[in-house]
Length: 458
Image 1 (tube, helix red, strand yellow):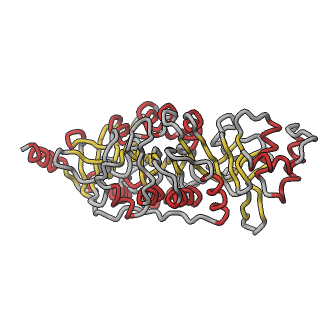
Image 2 (cartoon, one colour):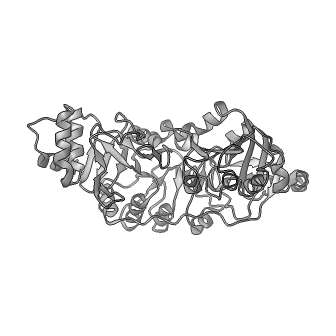
Image 3 (cartoon, one colour):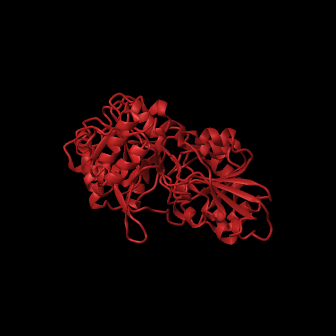
């Protein structure tokens, strides 16, 4: 039987995590799988070699597990981490021995194949081998095959807890296509509890909900506000909702349980919920395991604006940190302090707008409280010095606060300023008007009350 052949191949390639870590040489570049497919046990074993190696560079994306090598070498002369998207454990090491790699998410596989060379060792945690000899990338098909294609040494770390997530495309690798197999300690997968929505999040979610219609294909970002939208969709009378997203979150499970998701109106991947990776509750992982209604894809498919725009009535819902009066959006830093990354936000902002009937929403509460307790506006005259422009003003479609929705498309600089000031908290509007006048983007004949009415009526 073929399975006996694959089992024999498996045994030939089976090594311990310590043995796999011995393959690393000073100066090597190592690429870990995305999110919860990162090489946890491999990294723990590699940390033990802190006194034997120099200048080992590690690339990761959403470092979901404890960073043993980073902890073992805070100075970064032995192990230096480089992250495609700073999150989870990554944040403990930013500015110390971990650095961000700027990217548009849909370009990640291309960059892995063409720009991140050399790639000496790839380590991906997978679901157990099936009867056909395939390891499934489980919670992330983001760039698994790009890693495998470019790596000199390919290592699979098997975790029995990893859900088997059906494709899609590029979601599995065969035992004959890998060099070494590590059977992990089967640690529980990292879970992420759904973020709770604030009262302001709920107000914003209601505004967005009013724009949705039957058959909308929805992409949700991370955070309390997208979760609130998911809950409201589940409780609404909407029907035939489609899913095409980079991150599959618990909000989709909630919508599916309520019978809202069918995918019947999708132009491509009809009836399938399409995604690139997942991070959520254990219930979510259990739901995704061997579920033929879901399709795991490489991120250069899910996030490609040319693919997204093929889906009619596409709705993209994401959050940001701050916006300036010119319509530039920062979603990844607080000044020079790095918070997350561009991720796929710009991919979906551009793809959704090009969709027939598409809508892209960038949402934020109008204010936040600073550490000293003072109230600050998220709509600023100019972005905080050092802030990263995630979405250029030319790409932004609709901005949303609890005070309304404003479309930026087709608006001149004074129209943008007027609309944005209408989205601001009333306590900050006069100051923003004064700054807009200084910047020569304000018309004296305009009244801010009129701007608010225009915004709410968008």
